[in-house]
Amino acid sequence: MRSIWLASRLAWRQLTHQPARLASAVAGVVFACLLVFMQLGFHDALFDSATSTARAIRGDIIMFSRQSETTSRTSGLPRARLMQALADPDVARVTPIYLGQVIWKNPETAVRRSIMVLGADPDSGVFALEGASAAAERLRQRDTLLFDAQSRPEYGPIGERLARGATTVEVANRTTEVVGLFRLGASFAADGNLLTSDVNFHRLVRDRMPDMVDVGAVFLKAGADVSAAKTRLQRLLPDDVRVMTRDEFIANERAYWANSAAIGFIFLFGVGMGLIVGFVIVYQILFTDVANHLSEYATLKAMGYSDHYLLAVVFSEALMLAALGFVPGLALSWWLFDVSADATFLPMLLRPDMAAFVFVLIFAMCAASGAVAVRKLRDANPADMF
Amino acid sequence: MMPAIEIKGLEHWFGKGELRRQILFDIDLSTAPGEIVILTGPSGSGKTTLLTLIGALRAVEQGSLRLFGRELRGASDDDRIAVRRRIGFIFQQHNLLGFLSARQNVEMALELDPTIDAGERRSLASVMLAKVGLGERLDHPPSKLSGGQKQRVAVARALVGNPDLVLADEPTASLDKVTGQEVATLIERLARERGASILLVTHDPRILGIADRIIAMEDGRIVNAAENPCD
Ligand SMILES: Nc1ncnc2c1ncn2[C@@H]1O[C@H](COP(=O)(O)OP(=O)(O)OP(=O)(O)O)[C@@H](O)[C@H]1O
Ligand SMILES: [Mg+2]
View: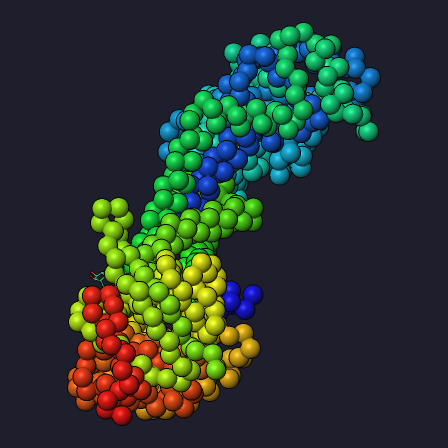
């Protein structure tokens, strides 16, 4: 313990002796931190937003067409399947959900743009969305809908207009009234979202056969065993239906984007680049520290310092650089996450588990640089000192 | 009394295979505790090689080398590190750590001893630096000291831990005549105060005066071992 303390004190003195060099080493670590954080941030944000529709749907079990890969491109499911599911003794109710794309006209610029619309019985409470349940009464009226306040700005300043009382918009060539806002967010598949009742959905999306639904949200009776019910339903229903737990449904959505778009790899690559840059910078600093002071290190060995002690010195330097770089790296990333969230409308969130993960990565990166740099210590041979 | 250094039939080779060349031949040498021995001889005669063997910086290949009664032939790395802690080394170059002050450099020699606490280290180092005439420059970094002052710090570092043996290889070679002599006298005075043995390699005839005994080497052999005629 004592020699670890002394070794790290020596490391600290060596590091702080040349503030400019220390600053450049720390800047390298900060840079690596930023790169890694941003890559992970965008990665998580894109996946979070990709699964946002799936996560907005409540229900213990989800019924999905076998041919549907993702909620943003569904093949219909016969409504009769939902009725069949009711035969299971544990099923309390099944809510049909409708998903589709319609053309929205920006009320300020008149530019038309495709927007995602979600429809379900307003009283079903099937959407886990802020503002959805409160608006149930109004959504039951003809040609009403809610607008996603986190949609991209290209759809127009709907929130502002609502505050002014300007509620009329044109959707799918129909004059419609925006009766409130909800929050879901833009994603890969949709730049914006609308929420409406099942009845209004069919007014907007007219090419849909009325007996086809997109998702069936199954609610079980209190205390029911979800996985047992899932197995029974899958056995009960024909093969054109996929029965998933809600978590499986979300994971499926995530996997679709991860696999079909090679997005996971791109971000992994970015993280790797960040770590390599940081590794090289830290290695450079540590290596020159050792190489430029070989005779001093050799003198310490002659005096009776062990190799372990000198290893501890170099490793302490590495870990100190990690700590010194991580703190400002975290703070800067925090700020950049906000900036990026504003620019991209993606849910950029710096979660504690991400911070902990990056901390581990950065420490491992610095420790690896240290491990490579200490090999130079072998050249410090006290017998060559005289 | 047990001799500080006791060498019998020591031989040493450098190189491998075809290039293998014998550097030291049948060295016999003993020094008494507190004795100051100067080793001279032409360049390449093997003085430094002998010093590094005695300093436990190289493994002994053949013959017997006992330091403070402990056989170094076949000693493990850890044994050799332990032996080194009883030796004060002074090199031709000062080899001070540039990022430490004069006093912190001297303290490095004490940090190996867990029985000395931080306060004691500080005061021992300060006292030692005062003795080498640097009492006013405790907190100076090596870059702010002259060549002679740096070598004095190195002397203080070698002696502060009360070593049983001081090994010095041309400690005055990088200094001018006057400073060289001052540093040599300093080494002698401090070693005598502490009863440490000294083995000092030098080409400098002006510092032979500090020796109790002068040993000359030639082509890897000790050619004479006489009492210092200057005494
Ligand atoms: N590491 C080594 N590998 C191979 N040969 C070496 C090594 N070190 C020294 N030698 C050789 O051993 C011989 C003795 O060298 P040593 O350094 O001991 O001489 P020295 O008496 O100290 O000389 P000087 O007065 O020039 O310092 C020389 O011929 C030298 O070339
Ligand atoms: Mg020599």
